[in-house]
Length: 473
Image 1 (cartoon, rainbow, N blue to C red):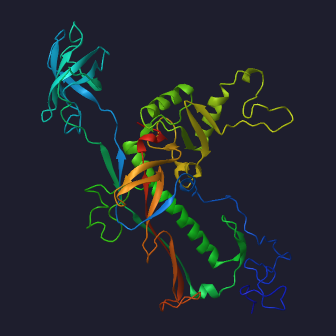
Image 2: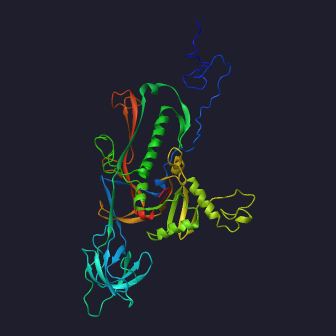
Image 3: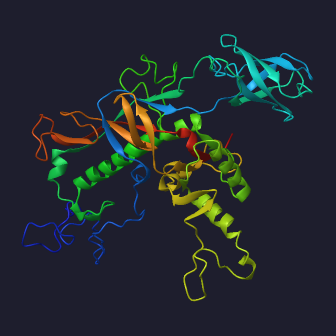
């Protein structure tokens, strides 16, 4: 009777019960006289695999004890209407102007104010004084200063803005007043969960591997290695959920209780969603010329004009910025000298830029999330691509907003995370062990389960100062 190849035998017995690479071989072939050469240290072929870093760099985390985060952002100090029409024909010395802008419930124009009125198509303009206002009908009467009267036709689409006022001697003051215009925004935290489980039997099996993990931990692990990777993956989800989250639209499958009776049914407003909705979007992929950036700067001038900004980019966008800045070097034709501008033949050539100034300060930072092929780095690019994000411009610093919950003004980073917490319950990052193995004694389950939970949302303040770079209009 032949001797079975399995189970095998100990080739180099150990005097102690210590797991060694020499006393256990899974692929041993006793017809082969040579033992396999093994590496007991795990090879890190993908380097640092985590992508969480973005919110750590630009944001902060703050507790909240409410299921809804609300804040008010300042409106414009000056009011401009861009969809108006005149009742009068060209050359008329007065007219009734009708304001037809969307979402205007009452016009902020008062009798005695002086206004600038221009034709959106031709730029022809008049200056006039408001003689009467009908707030309900969103109309006002204006008398023109110019003797030639109205310069544009009655069918023109007009823009109107206020530049001052004029009153006669001995008259009463301004009639009416204006209230500060605030915009109220809110977001709702979502619950994020994960779990790692290992049976008690598997925990008793010897199988150790020396590992080095992304957070610097080293040692011999087996089942805890998988637990540690679950933890790293969960920490990535804490950030990527804040970036990608979208609210559940009415009538969607997520909001349908019949289709989705158990899991989340409301969603949340992630960074990409907010900037797409009420921020600035560059729809041409990567801006590659100074003229492209000039158009972006022109848009920023019309927003908050934040002095310092950080552009988080994928690799292709980073190279495009480097090439654009290098092209400005007048000495490029006779030899590469850009980068630190002191390159010589005996030093490592620096072909990259960390930032530049053009109207504002722009700092460039690679964003691993946009490069990772298992995440957004695997999405298509080019003219045919739609929605692929290549970068995000984030204003630096903080802003002052009115916190609806606190009931007072507060300084907040433009991006920050709010997590649920109270004196007795902190849901920023919860982890606990259940089961009957690995030291846990909470149930009769013959396993150890490591549970992870967080409840949080991201607040994107002043989204009008952000720019999202993506493909597709």
